Image (cartoon, rainbow, N blue to C red):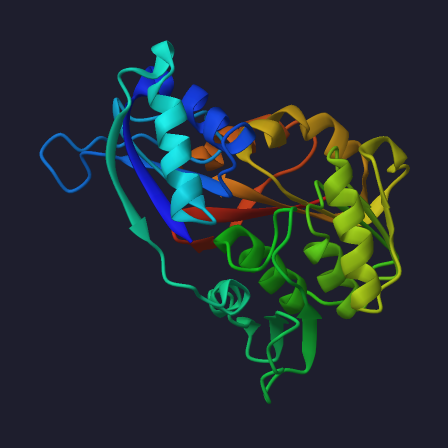
Amino acid sequence: MQELVLDCREALVEAVSDALMEELGAHSVSVEDADADAADEQALYGEPGLPAPRQAWQHSTLRALFDSEEQATQAATLLAAQDWARDVALRGLRAVPDQDWVRLTQSQFAPVEITPRFWIVPSWHAVPSAAQRVIRLDPGQAFGTGTHPTTRMCLRWIAEHARPWPRVLDYGCGSGILAIGAALHGAQQLDAVDIDPAAVEATRANALSNGVTLRAAPPDRATGHYHLVLANILAKPLVLLAPLLCSHLGPGGQLVLAGILERQADELRTAYAPWCALAVADRQDGWVLMEATGE
């Protein structure tokens, strides 16, 4: 593999990236701050759930991977010939050592301990000897591999409050990890819903691989009251969804919300106050989990 390294101003980053990927045969293109570790370094990405202030750095470095030196050189030559790309500067071309990319990627995902007896384990890892309940889950298109604090807090809550919930709703299910976790802890009828068709398909596949029966569908398929309602999304959508989620919460049912930064807890309490009294039940790395009981 050969890596082509280019310098580019912010306004051209998207166009250059598209040209490298779609027209010049690059396998991948990564973008980074050309001034990283220098006095002009910029913090670009903002808080979770908020759009990035810009799509690239004012002075960006692009790294494009090609199969051969010939392909990389040709791409640089063709790009330099474009009038619109005359401000793009070639920084260099270097060989990238061959690696077992599958093994390298897998090494980044180790088993995740939720409790000493409850673990999330990728399919290529052995199950830890202490694990009594295990979710087999590999990284994929949908959010929820057990590595994020919000997911771990939700799963920990499920493990600590385990009971045979007759009906459970996982709203914004992502990979389906929360619904699967609830099933392993006694839940019976499970509805996992998401607006993203890829998440619905991922949930079905993950449920099948874990021997769990559930219904994965778009959100309009959630009907009636549930004994447990789970929603690990982000604070802003959770505020907007307050009437809907509470309409699905049966009397005495339990509502568990995550994806909330500590400073957003009061906003969530206010939004849900007409229906229930939310309280912080767990904290981790600047995030909180909030719970309530249906009236």
